[in-house]
Length: 107
Length: 195
Image 1 (cartoon, rainbow over the protein chains, first blue to last red):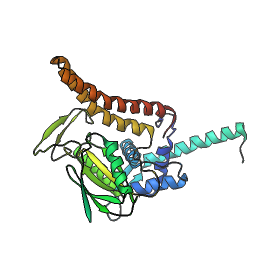
Image 2: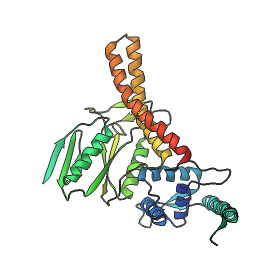
Image 3: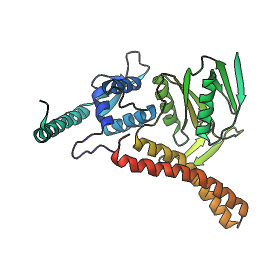
Image 4: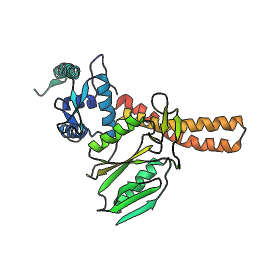
């Protein structure tokens, strides 16, 4: 599975990483964020997380920064990354609205 | 009281990983590695879990960055050699490395082809690669060195009409097939599943 730039559909890993980085975080905090939010359903391996962070950095969706002590490497979402995440939210909302109309939602 | 063991696992990464985890079950944790040396200290049984990762395809900076990333994750990381080379000032070309081949020397990644990563046991399984796409890429980095060895031996065997090289070539075909199976399996799974 890969991120589809045209339709804007993101993989779950990508979307969660982007969401986690609205505040600066280092690798371990990103991993914890995702595990907590998904109740442990999505547990990322450190090697997979490393690859994902690097490819998002290459795309310019996130950028590295130093933490206050300047020791651990932290990441933060970029303006471009935010645009991508917001577009995906709009797309998902549309999808949910249409699905609810057909399947019948709880709302 | 530290305990020293001498072992050589070569390319059998899983065997090395299993042995380290067995030692952990018995109440030993790794404190130092040498060419064939594994030094342990006593601790509570099952206190840590181990993964062995191949990084021979990476550049010096790439390997260091990967190493530091794991340390920042709160893991303890050891460098380890994959082969037994008594060498100083070694320079070797690795055509199978990332970006179409790299030169490895003693100052870069030569004799530092592996990382041993130790995590405090939290009861959850310890896996470094979880998504199918990422697993496919990792198995590729494991397959490529063997593929090169296989090709070289096959050329020697045919060129010299040598049975000995032919047998070695057949032996090196085994890891190529093992990793290739994993690559294809994960590539297939990646079409429909993310992890």
